[in-house]
Image (cartoon, rainbow, N blue to C red; front, side, top):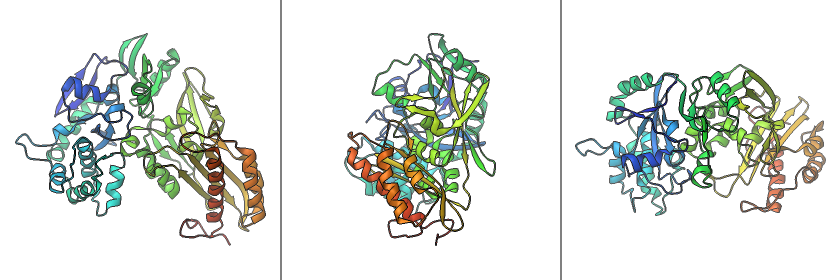
Length: 490
């Protein structure tokens, strides 16, 4: 066990001993290092002005990922390389290719957001992608906002800078950096503080389970994309933080052939290609969840454990009949994910018990899956309504099982059991069954109205999404629907 945080900065190992549980990376950069190029805009991971890049070893390979420093705990960067905008230009003043492209394309206006854009483009530059259209660059910049509306030249700068493989000093020094990060990957438990106030990052699942069982009042942190806002916006007192990011194996993803086994520490970014292989809608769902910065840090396990009624992934996981693995001390148990959510802010989780993983069944040729997210803003916005649907279709076109789940319609992510019953054992193209299912939705949900959507809007949207899913499943497609991937039902 050690009582320090270690990371690589400007090619050297930095070791910090005096780290409080809720110390933020942005504050360290600006107030301790005086690296003030990184800005605070929203303090909630939305605007991207605070974007920095973390170098990590993923599967033995050095990768660079953008993160929001404003909600990243200092303790989370243990074992990483930290790169801020000050680090990009050479010592002789020569601009990095991304910076040069921003200059040449006139991509900076007031300049406040510019460092964050530069760092997101730096991550794109090192991603291996070579974008030829605006869409790819827009995806990478979805988490960066420019109030001067200077997006066109910024996107053009991204296209111009990223047309060739990376050829900067970071790529030239990649082998040395990987060696440093390998040296820092010691697997030790980290504990800084005392029994009343601490930051801890256990190195194994067993030690994580033991520590949390002894301190069930501690706050579990994976990516801090939610807990970070508890600190910056709600000013909560969080004296005990247990970071799960170092627990070996918690980020493991395995495909058994019939299901995906996803560790609770696996990030959205790591899970995305696996979900996209299951179904295009699942891939699109994760692409629209947060931003590149959020997806590089946040985890699906955290999205579920949070228990939010408007979390994006729980409705889809419920529709897929996923199971949840929970662990307390040396004991583990599994339960259908829908049973985990009891009421608003209440989950079936004992004191000292944590979400350890997810088991997601793979679909077969009899399944048709759809999920849709409706939000005010297309990118990086919370759902007003989220609908997920899995229909099991027999050879003669009958719905043998309907699984329908919604987020934003109740105090928890919830199945529409009355609507399911109205569709079960009916012909897929039976319009009367559809009508009964639409009527049954009124028995399933009585949503509230809030600043995201009125109750009437939510009800009407839920009906429309069910209708869209049935239309697509039946093979009656239009410009606004997607063709059934497995087969067209006739």
